[in-house]
Length: 584
Image 1 (cartoon, rainbow, N blue to C red):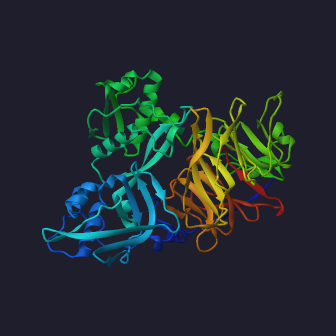
Image 2 (image 1 turned 90 degrees about the horizontal axis):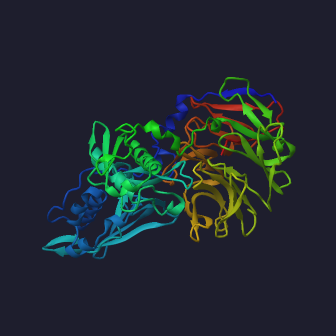
Image 3 (image 1 turned 120 degrees about the vertical axis):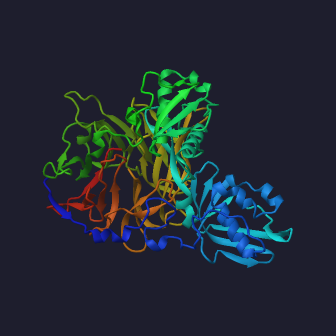
């Protein structure tokens, strides 16, 4: 079916309102007024308490000092000896909306009451706060040698939301999926503005601790237990020397390479190259002393198959290829007329990352059919999987595993995975009474993205989850659910993207596509997102060259070109619509 191309050219002025929106941090919406106010003193080096200052100045100075993990010793000078000894700031950091009204005098101390934005755990995991959750603590004051001091240790440290981007930075620790063919990022928030050697040492030490609880046993750390950095990680001319102790010397050659991949990828985000030794000898003796990052590109967690940039869709309940997005040919929808998928009408369609096979949920909702997209003359018998009730659009991971969630409209939704060898395994789930609306697996097969409908709030929300195992590795389960706590309503869809997650939802006006960090710490309008249509669904994946595609409320599709212009595929027949999908 032929289509005509209509381009919506976006003037730079359209992006002016988004120019100051950061891509990470604690922003709760995409507008400038979403920033916490600048109260002054942000980023100033912490100073010890001056003599004879008042109660409000003591608590304010204490909060300023504790906001910097490098100044905890200074912060303890604001406390009584007993409180300073009991304080454990490393246990957690509470991020709160710092305003002039956050602190008030109350009795013999100062009360802190503010909107809680998030909690950063001991390993640096960002957990968004609930919608009505408060940062609430009473700083009791007591005189020590005639000077006011804080007499009660708070639970961890407090950090104003307007200081997060100055004090902390999101960093990825890299571990392997169970197949050991793709790396999985484990994002943590760590102090920034450190000298390169300290930053590198910190990252490698955190990496060698293993994954956070959020990934748990869903991933594999190649470093044997007890592996440590023998000394700090020195950096010279952009090269970080990682000297591991002898424990890592027990690794086989293949595992040594995988451990090197973890280290090289983790250090690369600091723009550092890696030189890795074990007991003074090179970890990889047959490779260059300074390991090139490109030698480990095969483990890219975003996956790099060129087929990931190819768009597919359903037109008239039939699978299609959408060609011409790159401008090399006329844009058209080409039906897949051969193979088992062409024999059925479909309600949804998924394609492997390699683009060689796909799966449909049949229009009658009774089966999932799997088969090659372009089979040989004798394609063999297609794989058919019976399903019950409402079945969500299936999702492939980078190992060609097909994830199927059916009975979605029942009290007991069912999740199963069809492995690349045809085996079908159950995956234990507990959605606590909420209803799944969409499921998208990351290429690593470890991280899941879900749109859920809340039984209590009667609204859709977005959360991530992790595939782990129980019962000694015999039972797969989907757990570690992490709601992103977005200030959006009318959420209709979400998909993985190279920059994080794209969510379709409403802030204050019409529905828009939003770019969200994977832990929910930032929310901003997708660049170029002032289109002349109402978005409803999104197709995207993590490949660096994939163009996000939006299906509007009339069923037409639009994609974001590389020059930030929305390109629309208008139909000559307004009754015909396309439901788009990318591999994944």
